[in-house]
Amino acid sequence: MDYKDYYRILEVSKSANENEIKKAFRKLAVKYHPDRNPGNKKAEEHFKEISEAYEVLSDTEQRKQYDQSNKSYTHTNYSYNQNNIKNNKKCTNTNNFDLSKYRSFEEFISDLFGYTSTHKTSKTEFNNRSSGNVEYEGTSSKQETTLHLTYSEGFYGTQKRVNLGNKIINVRIPSGAKNGSRIKVRQKSINNPQNKHEEDFYLNIKLTPHPFFSFESDSLTCEIPITFDEAILGTNIDVPTPDGIVTVKVPAGIRNGTFMRLRGKGWIHPKNNRGDQLVKITIDTPQNVNNVEKDYYKKIFDNRNYDPRDDIKNIKL
Image (cartoon, rainbow, N blue to C red):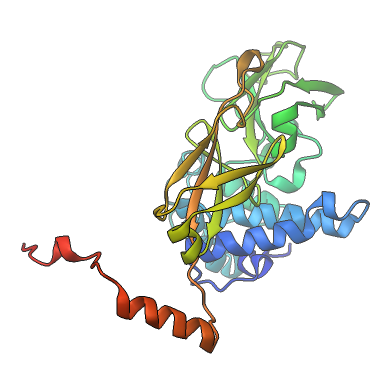
């Protein structure tokens, strides 16, 4: 089976930090997003690969396990404890790792990290043990699987075709589904091999990473960069929201990392109430400036009348 190099997919080095990985993901996700490439199957598949790569590399623990499995995967000397994998605990190195049971690198990664990889978002298979979709623990009668949704599907709601092995059913996902949402499907499910009877099952929702939006606690969040002069003088910025573009006034003297709240513009909550959207302001440092700009910055530097480090000059251990 082919090895998937997530660093190559995101076009970053293996030493890339969290910021570099996020920037690379946003750039590529915007470029290959299905909405920008209607009918382009190659772009759609690459977008799924990009999302899958970001999902792993943006998580410190999963990235550590992936880097570790990277070497072991190519040398076929990696082994693990199944219970540790499900709890995302560190795996152990032995000489008993059996790659033959995996039909693809996606199955290997899914089993290793205990989740369903994003390339399978079109349908969820319950009858494939190695895909990590259905888990039975002890004598529990509950069946569950992870279902990946885009932010758009989670926000507006959608219909999903779910493969139960012996039949395919349509499941309605209500609007406002997000990470951690748990949906009970009140239908006959597949047989639990431990209990030998049919029962309901549960869908645990996981949103595919978005190039612009994320969550801060329960609030829909985004980051908007502004320049130094905009931070000092204040400005108006256009902010994308689920309802479209909203113009927001940024006050003069705003600090880097400040959150601004857009009331009623966030995620849909139960009973169709709307939450707030948080806008994190980041001050973008220019990497390349021309001579004219340098002269202006030099004048500002020479005429500055305060020292931001005044309060720490007398700090001692």
